[in-house]
Amino acid sequence: MSKKLCAILFAPVFLFVSVQNASAMDGAELVSKLDSTAPNFNTDGCKSARDTMAQYNGHVEERILEGALMWVAFGGIFALPAVLSQGGQEARVANYLMENLQTECGRQALFPVYLEAANKGEAPAQAWIAQSYESGKGAARDPAQAISWYQKAVDQNFPNAMVNLGNMYFNGEDVASDPAHAIALWQNAADTGNPTAKANLGEAYFEGKGVQQDTAKAISLWREAAKTLDPTAQAYLGKAALEGRGIQQNSGEALKDFRTASWNGSGLAQFELGTMYETGNAVPRGDADAYRWYKIAEQNGFAQAASKRQELAAKLSSDQIQKQDAAAVVCVKSHFMNCP
Image (cartoon, rainbow, N blue to C red; front, side):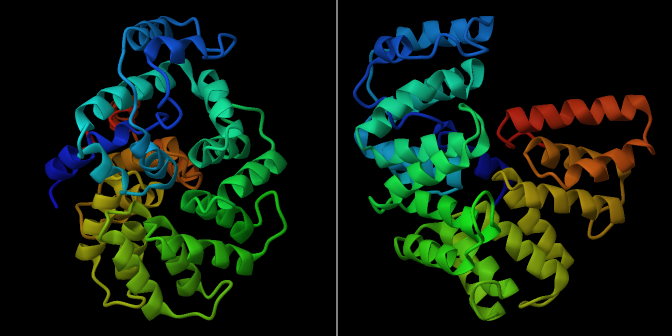
């Protein structure tokens, strides 16, 4: 699939940031519920975003709530049919405004809106609150609260909460490691068709962690998830092709998978692109190109990229660094749709 086509398909989907709890409110009511003590609340950008939202009289359709959280928080593609269905034009406008509101005012400003919905029992909002507590973005980091809120959403069979709670147990992050419990959560989510759960299960089978190693099953799960353009599955398929594990070694195919996954937001794929440029594997070797992709991956939260970027910085001129830093910022701000 071409980069241009990917950009067209995902332009509306990337707008799904925080609409799932605005279904019963118009713009003015939503703005009135924002946390005015949030750090960015009185910045010019936030004021403009608030003014624009306050003038919006439409409501976000209830039916797209799950899709909204599914794409942004967990990389799912199920939001796409919703946004293209009846009422999709209003949904696109609302999602754009909510994206802009969160970007300019910060996640913390929207926290009370989500919390109100979460307390009313809305599973997507409960998962959003859990993610805020887990990451420390939007609320003080509190793993116990994160687990509690994820579990509330899991109890309502919300697959994306199953995925994130499974991640915590699988990696032993802020909770005792329990790969078997993680696998069970992911399997339940995968049974609903959740592509991220399939991608995670694929990794478990590929590495033999929590389950008996089965590379063929891993590849099969990743291919299923990749059909819905899941970036994690695409990145893992790229790694398998690069290493020749489970499928035939093919650097060219790995490059294609990494590029597609990078445009879809995979930090792993962005890091691997940096490595391919640094080593000249299937692409012309270029330290500047490698630096840029490491920078993009780093800004996207892929921690391993920072040290690699710093190593390459010593080989580049200040002008080269400035140019590649600027290109990386453009790439990230465009939701990876405008990347060299």
